[in-house]
Image (cartoon, rainbow, N blue to C red; front, side, top):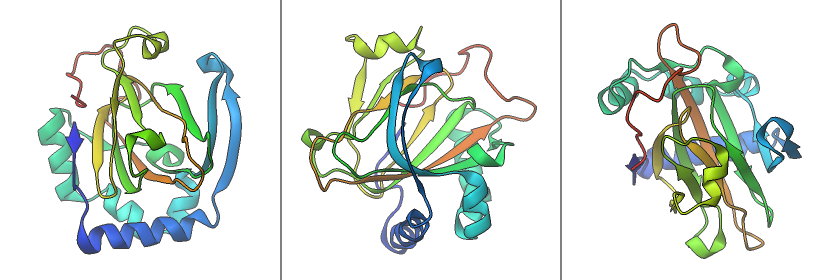
Length: 202
């Protein structure tokens, strides 16, 4: 589900400043995921354990009752924050030409992705590319794949365990894509066993 302008004004400014601060301790990653057929990861990241140790804002945001109520209303799932802290919130920064987050599905049913910085135009790359209810990651290379461009303050909610998705490479130097990924599951469930819920990103 597209959530344009999800963050605005002071909320966006505060989160942008927090992610910029956390970027100073984030680590550069450049490797291929063997379990995902060599899908590349070229980005700077910071996982949930470090974020929890360094930030009061982000854990509070992820567990916000109003936000959880919204996720439950929209998804029809009894959304709760992911139990594994490392994956509960992740900062992903694409900031070098050709940076990308390769093809994958997630362990948890829901991902709420918040943008504080984004490429100005689709031609700059950094697009979300996805296939609903995918039979496999290979479908990202077929006409079934959809693409979406986002702006700072936007968010999207993805049924991320049954949707093949990736971020297309940045195509220009000086372009940045900074997102905070918040992962949610349902009580007692680590991964979805069937794609029973409707895709949220349409």
